[in-house]
Length: 442
Image (tube, rainbow, N blue to C red; front, top):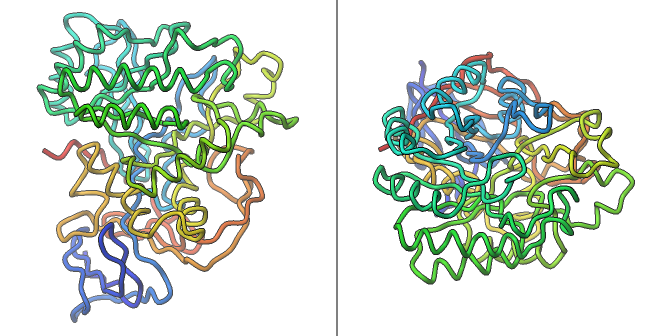
């Protein structure tokens, strides 16, 4: 592969923002510095930001939910990811009590083969037997060391009780892995009332994070709380951290930009997501937590459904599929609503969308960074471009966007994955199946 130099742009890392050239050879970053060198193909990035490729640590492609499947499969979802500057995503196996974890991994890896973007997997934990400890170790040998647990969803058989969670966390600690937790206290949730704040109160999130924090402290297992939605949840996370628990948190763009007032709209059912959207003060508390560095990552929990998939259950909230699209809009929303509005620095954007998730799930230093030796996953973003988000102009396989009509500042204009152009000037250049599984970097 010929050498390529991106020059004339502003290079953004978590610690540094400034003019520099990025030299790429054989799919890896060779050098970042004031000069690119000679005998290489050059690309002018004048006026553009040069970022590491984003790592979306929380997506659900082709996920079976409520008798249907999330609207994006690995092909369409990865296409949308690349268009938004997400060069690596982390999806989940689909667990069952009677399915061995390595078998679930094998099945999901086969399903992921059409992906255009690189990917990793979390292992979904449904059901516990003495064999699970051995299976966790087997997954580690396969390059997977993050395991997903639900403290809610007893109605669908996915809930993990605290005794089981503790046993699993002890094994995960032994392999140097991470327990990823959906933190809602099942006893405080009323699933028949739907995925709304009056049925899934912030106190359920707070309670669950407190419980998990105690287990993280007692077991020493690295723990990652998914999709924190509330000020109460943030308070519980900070309490656990002050107690010495090795625990970090994630939030999502929809909790930063939206609030529960959307449920009053005629199409409010389309915004169904769990945990639900909450009050404006929760939204502001999450921005403040990002400003102060209290969270590890912003991920999308991308789980889209079409209007046709949600409309039939408008009057049956307990059966309403829950999830929102987001993988394509992660970077632009963090730039527009975060950086451009003074809530985040460019370095923080890279920290939350690139380096933080890569470090959390064993992808760093191969992903999420512009360090020499890393994969040459880069994003060119025009920080001055203004445009309106509309579902019809995006690549996600849904006819609904929760941010429909929102004017944003910043646009992804080019994306490199392992040194190859995969998206440029509105055109997808990647071929199906070019994505690679990225194992945990020991």
